[in-house]
Length: 119
Image (cartoon, rainbow, N blue to C red):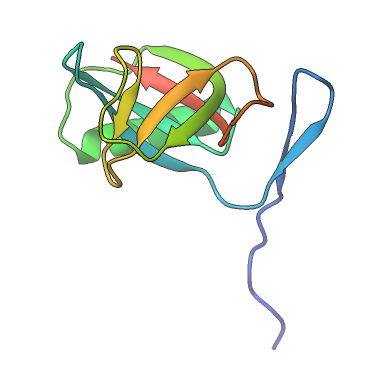
């Protein structure tokens, strides 16, 4: 009897400065709420693989009962803050009440890579 565990390869993501980030956990899809705009998006964290992210985002979108298709995506790095008051351009995470902010700068407070999908 051998080991039947399927190992998932670790995704490597090259940052803007040329350094490589290695994702050790599987991607996950979170719902982000933008209170100022009154709409929701899905952020697939820990990946820049758009095809994989789209599959996870569509499954999460269907799970929460939204019928609008997810058409637009934004690839980048996200920073997460422990705050209950998002700035006008920030989003509120659905599960933990944290504030999530997209950033182009992957070195400053970036929590990790992700693909955000909007309806």
